[in-house]
Length: 91
Image (cartoon, rainbow, N blue to C red; front, side):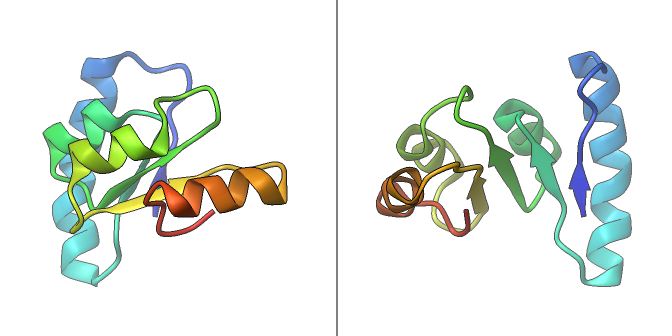
C-alpha cells in the first residue's frame, strides 16, 4: 500500500500513517509513504517512494537503513540505473 496525501499537512499524514502501519502489518502488506521520508521514519512504515525532486536516493538510503524499502520514480533508463546504484529497491 502506498500512502499518498499530496495536500495534507505533516501532522495529518503522520496520523494516517501511524493508523495504517498496524493494519498493513497485520495483513502482511508493506506500507510505503509517498515523498515524505520524515513521515516514513516517524511512523515506522516499511519504506518510502521518492520522486526526482525529493531527497536523493543515496541520502534516503542512509536515513532509512538497509532494512526499509526505497522506491524512486524515474523517467529515463539513466535515472533508473542511478537510483539502483544509490540504493533503490525498485524504480
